[in-house]
Amino acid sequence: MSLLPRAALAALALSSSFGLVLILARSLPMDRPAETQADTAPARAAADRDPTPAPDPTGKVPGQVLADPGATRGPVSPPLVLGKPPATKSDAVLVVDEGGTPLLAKHSQSVKPIASITKLMTAMVVLDSGSDLDETIEITPADRDNLRHSRSRMRTNAARLSRRDMLTIALMSSENRAAAALGRTTFPGGTQAFVAAMNRKAQALSMADTHYADASGLDGANRSTAEDLVKLLQAAGRYPLIREATTKSELQVQPYAGGGAVPYRNTNPLVRSADWRVEVSKTGYVSEAGHCLAMQAQIAGRRYWIVLLDSAGKLTPVGDSNRLRKWIESARG
Image (cartoon, rainbow, N blue to C red; front, top):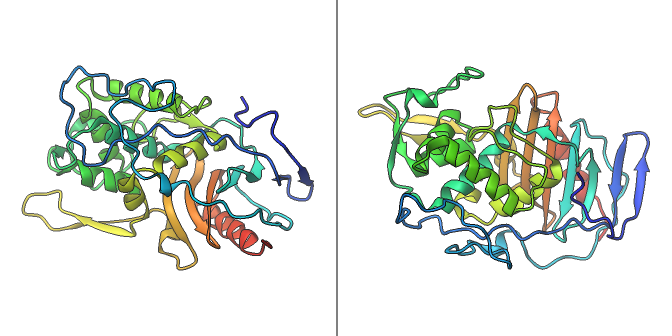
């Protein structure tokens, strides 16, 4: 299902050598993301409250406050004159500029598994819920990955961290048990209620081709398109805690009483590169999804959203990102 406007102005040039579509003037709908609750909001007052109130006709969600509109919007620079697009190895590619114009699209409407990019939605639902970020959460056997049997340094019935730290390592280092614990503990209805809230949030953001099945992204049924994920990035960029956590290079946490620090590193090496100014970032991998990367970044003083899905190699999204950055940097303004 296409989410790009059918009546928008378009001038398309097909690069037959790389099978890419260079989109010079077509507007991606800049649906305003559901407005976010402050990261430090108090816990829910009533356990039976709908965790994700329906937006009113203006798109606002009752009781929520816009975190930082400047994090996704700003003065729009004049259009760039771009050269021939680079060859990209990721199967699905989408690059959108700060004015909402797709600069490069390849299979951007194809519905694909998105792996741990799912965790951006997990984080937004946690923050929207108003749950106490300083509350301590314990990892339990229910948080184990019984689908793919992925490893974790968060031992069951032993690891305990604040909800804030669980959220940070889930976003920064893709810690699956932390994400599962967030889904399990946010609402009285547990994981089932949490996943339902994720799907309601996706609907509120007009992510019509997106479906969530769990909080971690391990389930291959977490699916979306590159176009929908740009909307996800735009929404996530409005949460200060998400921007901070996804761009943090590393973090040491102390989940065990009397134990030492456990180090975590960001799964996106570009956040440690002097060539990049990453503002929001999430990597992902499961076998069905391939290697994935979604970013909001500043390149040559302009903001861009970059989504790369279904890459065969672990470093392929990084290589594609660097090729796209150099292509944009070489453009004439």
